[in-house]
Amino acid sequence: MHAALQLIQRRHRLQAAQPGAAGAPATAPAAMFSAVPGRTALVLDSPHSGTTYPGDFRAAIDLPTLRRAEDTHVEKLYAFAPALGVAWVEAHFPRIYLDANRDTAEVDASMFEAGFDTAWTEPVTTDPVVLQKVRLGKGLIWKFTDEGVPIYDRLLSVAEARARIDRCWRPYHAAVARAIDAAHARHGYSIHINCHSMPAVAASHATLHPGLHHADFVIGDRDGSTASPALSQAICAFLRERGYSVDYNHPYKGVELVRRYGHPAAHRHSIQVEINRKLYMDERTLAIEPAGFARLQGDLRAMVEWLLATDPRQ
Ligand SMILES: [Zn+2]
Image: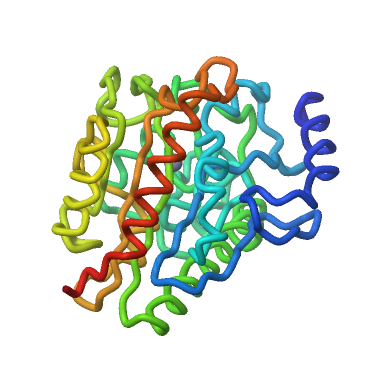
């Protein structure tokens, strides 16, 4: 393992008792996620803001390069939410180690040691749209950074991929599903906001639209299939009224976490919210820009409070 990774890992073990979101209970040192139960119809999850780099990652590139894949500080932007009774689920594992916003079928056989075809007993995707992302190196376990740099100088074993799924993917998804089920059981509907951030400009291997300058927000509901389009468009309008540029379902429609849990006909709404990192941080140093962060957080709080007063059945 890279020396810098060992250092950060030790640092994170020491910090593990500190919650990511304000009000979140302390987690055990090895916890790969934290979850705070809610008492409202609203559930927020942040799958990509984790910064605890596990010891078995064995990546070939340095930590600053790996960290460019994080949705850094997203958990801090929404730190007000648990105190409002909003359920909160947060990954501590980094996205570049295991991407919780992918299906477990989104694996790239070329990353694995010989014998993958017989050792991997679960489905492997053949969906041409999903395969486009896998080829970019953006499957369940990433092959390339957003800049196209290979993350490993070795082939992975099926056992280590399974271990990542068992330790990170399954418990994270179970926690999101549990939170949404509980919200729905209490209120007869649920609104799940899947929280992300995006670079100001898409890098070469980040998306299917390299070089695209992103709006301040991108709201995604997979073309109205994971939430009521009226609710998604009301979120767009709310943010535009506060002065932000907002795109809807372009270039990000939402991925696995909204696809799996959004079912608007059953009053289960799942919406992806992408925030442009230029609004709150320096993308080069990863440092928070306090004035931008404070303004943005105030607007996110207003959005969450407005959602708490919104019943999408009406
Ligand atoms: Zn993300």
